[in-house]
Image 1 (spheres, rainbow, N blue to C red):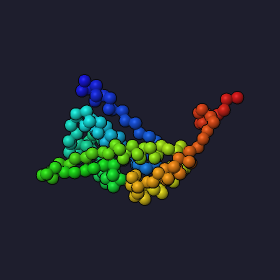
Image 2 (spheres, rainbow, N blue to C red):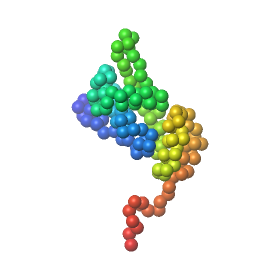
Image 3 (tube, helix red, strand yellow):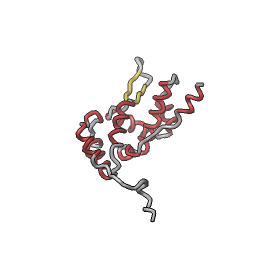
Image 4 (spheres, rainbow, N blue to C red):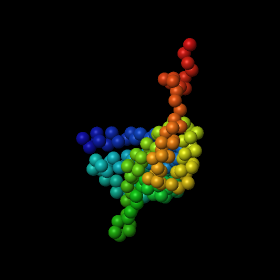
Length: 156
């Protein structure tokens, strides 16, 4: 049963809109943190050292530290130490992540999405600080296509 749970969590969905906000290393970090949260939820221990996190994620120490710093600033990640100060714990906030995914998935207009990411998120604004009117404005940039598959030519 436990191995079945483990196998189910090797797949993590990652919406493409997030690629306009995060580097490949940050993306990899996020994918693993989402997986670790599901593992924790199902009783698996994820109380590892930084070295173990880095090894499991397959990223450099510098990329790991940069990801931690950025995601803590965005309030996507929490970090704390044990009482002795010799162990670090991480928790990925799936609620904030879900809100971010909803915001960045509300349009298919790549130009507007990139502009939105640069204007709001890359300037250091928090996900929770983005007002509903700003999300609605982004949603109104959605491109509408009458074609079922807009990337394919019309059949004659």
